[in-house]
Image 1 (tube, rainbow, N blue to C red):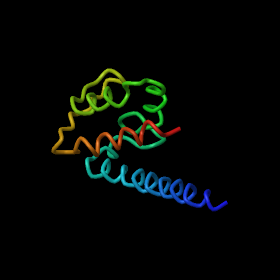
Image 2 (cartoon, one colour; image 1 turned 30 degrees about the vertical axis):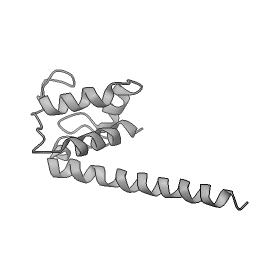
Image 3 (cartoon, rainbow, N blue to C red; image 1 turned 90 degrees about the vertical axis):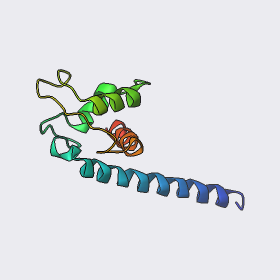
Length: 107
């Protein structure tokens, strides 16, 4: 029983760190203006994040592909309305990666 306490403590700590990191991701997306066109579960101008997660589910290169799409912008994947490019001055690489990982984790 004594041996379980450190393991449980570490596991709970990891869960809390993960939860707090995930909670910060939407804030970076809000600051970058992403939420003007996207939401977790409904189409606004662009697709919902849940639709994006479903489309890229199981694809090993999803984070890389989506980072490039967000950086370059474009149209035709989700309809005719173009998405403007989002440079690092708008959202940092670290925040963009965290945001994409948040999106891909949605169900």
